[in-house]
Image 1: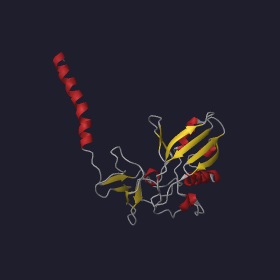
Image 2: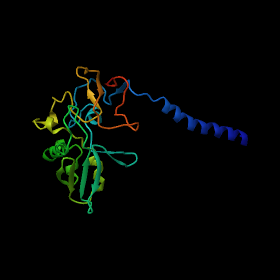
Image 3: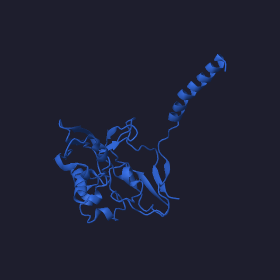
Image 4: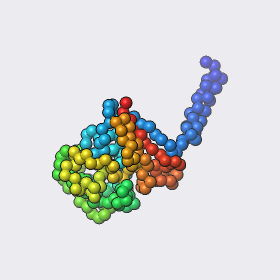
Length: 240
């Protein structure tokens, strides 16, 4: 290929690389309906219990959220319900600082009591410790104040952050009276801090709908609440 043709080729390629992202960005729409296929196949069984191994896909993340998010591709630990964290000098105590403006979708304010309660469920019952954090050196969890907790480990254990990120927090005021949390089937309209809420009466053997949590605590880069919508945004989960 001649030099002139090579120049034209690379010029076109560069233009595509620069223009396509801009076009994609310009076409991003807010609102509407997102249809998502469930990971498992077969008839849907209504199970939004975050401690159950057969919970529906939307349970974790859509309803219940963790303190931290672990990016498996970059290794980055992203603060979530915890706005920040800090290790002690000897790297055995992890202090978590929580957001103070988070509410459960039933209007009750989220606090360190919910986090302490969730961790203690796993401490008392290994089946509820789905992250396995109590088997990985965690020896104690202490509430410092309404929005601060400390996790103490039996040794230096910085990689444990990825396990902390797998603990999904449940509301104490809902779960404290549940006799068997691991097998509870009464969690039909989950109370969570997540961006979505279950649409009552929408569940069938083939689909169910979620709608946005109007009081979700996170803000988008544009300063608007997430998930943002212009008309009723509804999530649908399917199994085929």
